Length: 280
Image (cartoon, rainbow, N blue to C red; front, side, top):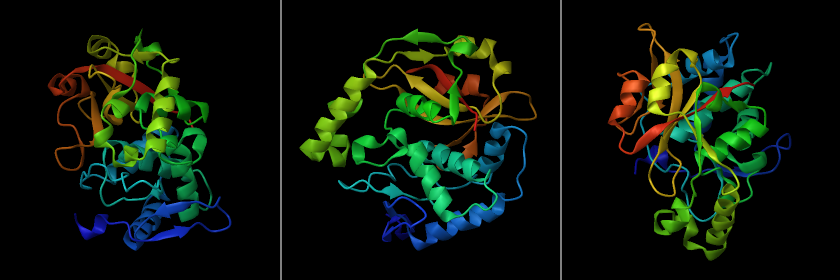
């Protein structure tokens, strides 16, 4: 593992922020502060347009999987040097939120990231992280940050039990601890009360014009026990088609070469998308 990806600085936030242990290297703190300065001059009428502009500043940032899996003790991981698809979306959204403040700073970024990443906006251990993206959407909709517009685009409700994590316990080091494992069972049980709404590839093609740059796109899957396999931002480029701005597992943050409709054809077991529109 590259040294830049090792979290060796653990500290408590200043008194202006609720006390919380975070994991962040000095390089990553500097990267956050530099990013704040870089986007200070951004000004857009729509939240989605601003998020796309922020997201584009990350193009070329290496893709790194499982950057949040740091051990049994959950901490708020801040890492801009290596992103997976979810941390890319979360970090861009956090920068978008603090961009509304007159004097954005590192502490404000930390608060925004915790609010986005954890259930009810509070880090209370591993199981409080919004691991399943459909719950991520629902929770951030309650916080007033996004609105699930999948149904409005022609999506269809489906019933699906989410239990991939506990059924594949060995893939998640934190769940070696029985307490954490049982907490995740409780989380998964709670999702049974919620149906999923998915926009099929056919309806996506029909209603592509209704998508806007900055919409959060989550790729729904037929994999048993799992809801989403990938996520990113919709971006309308000069061909007037919606493409995907995302942290690609092929290597880095990029804009998909193919329009989203065609990109999905190459994703195994994809059954469509879930769409959440930023509204902050």
